[in-house]
Image (cartoon, rainbow, N blue to C red):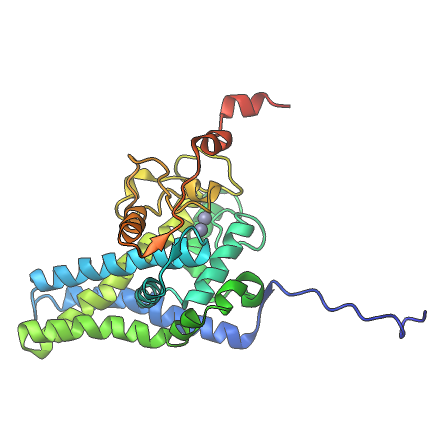
Length: 321
Ligand SMILES: [Zn+2]
Ligand SMILES: [Zn+2]
């Protein structure tokens, strides 16, 4: 058979794509949702002499941070990315909308990028490893900055068809994802309206927008990004898992349980990241609440045997030839 007659093999599916158009979108997203909140924090502090904050701003900041943070860990991460439990459609929509308000990308992109992170943890292809930028102090510092947020300026975009085919079949999620920018805007508008109504003034609206919108986004972003950066470099490593993921128990409450990151890499199918009742994990508590209310099911944590089988025993591991 000549070369021309031979049946053509389909080209192998690309796992990630790069294009100037995608990079333009990434740069715009980075400036709008990652850099602007930094200026938002500066503006909020500068605005204090004009409008001192009260209980309203504190409530908007903490309430908005908890709502969007829980939606990221429970919705974006544990439900949509890792399918660690099943949830009613209404719960899926609420979690996807609140998660979008965090400004960390539409749910499909977030899921695809995060699945690629697990697949290639701390190796080529990991979108945000702190461990691939060289050794020494400079290399480690560069790696930390890259993994914390500079990677988002421009990066390979994972192929959604490959990494998130299940989500492409979920019409509800597709619809929510399509309006991502509007959800982010709504997440800014709600605290602005509440601030305006409570204080009956435009300065109240601006104060609400700054503290409940931009500062809230800034605080949550840096907590979630710290999982990608610091917890792939520093912390404890009780379980064997691909890559260099670590646990940072002191941040458990602040991160809604996300900081049990080594546990999570070792058992990505577990709805609980703490794995033990005494390891604080607010994300898992919310899943248990949803299950008790009949809104979530198939909530299964790894058995004790599975946990033990994956436990690292540095002395024994080192003795193994
Ligand atoms: Zn994950
Ligand atoms: Zn990780």
